[in-house]
Length: 353
Ligand code: MRU
Image 1 (tube, helix red, strand yellow):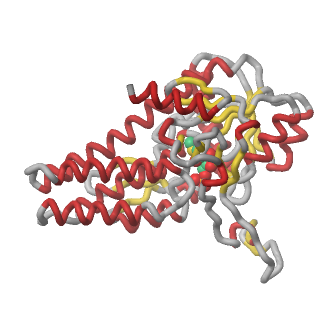
Image 2 (spheres, protein in one colour):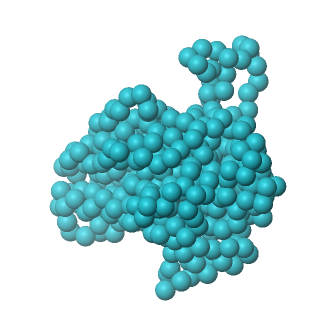
Image 3 (cartoon, rainbow, N blue to C red):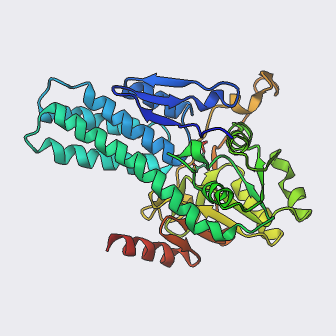
């Protein structure tokens, strides 16, 4: 068993970003010194997974602050504010990106009104990014604690995409209960969908579970129905990029199909979600912006072209699972069930008390 890889860490004056595009073959930590480099890292999916995107963006804001060492607080804040707006254009679907940037902008604005030196302002901004990262680790562990009772001895769990340690500060969301179950000596099997076209399931989930010594079997996406029909799956657990106020769930393309299959086989479909991924300002799944990615992700595989030149391609990176397919949403504050409009609202009301 090897120590888990860290997707993001602060290097003193730069962000260290694990290049997830190169996994599992190569482990390369990139040194990023500018917000532009962080934008590119998020956009090209060197870092991916909703919480990790938010953390990366927060450090991108820190790098923007560091560029303005000798300026006045107002000028410093203007640069930080611009960097927040710019980083928000790196990817559209995962709400954690906007959540983290709003948090950084709010703190920067409050700081800029004080009489602190720029050096102190930058220290405080870094402290906020470090807090976002540290809180995410604790939040993921708490999701694991709340989801742990769902994992019974000998069961099979199917997951889609990568909602593991690589997608977060540590533990992951969907994978957190698996790590906790392993700590408790519970034995279970994980089936990881390969997750076309970017293969987060094959390259990342199968890799990180295998590294952790968890029993994982890789499936091509079109095998989930067959495996369910064999009775090998007792639960599906996935992560999410955004939960709408009515409980509709955006997650990696293919998740909706898995949810429909789970319902058809009478298998519970759980969504592991930090509060930072629940967006009460987005009324329904239809209001969630869905990223479309380059055609080459579909027309090229095995290192060569695998589709005729000029063919039309539709490549949405996410889909929306309607709330009626969601058995429960597991958050760091507990498990919520339908009707989600009410249960999610109550969750935030309790949180804000
Ligand atoms: O395109 P990606 O790899 O960023 O998509 C990631 C997912 O869909 C994850 O399931 C989601 O962000 C949850 S990560 C804890």
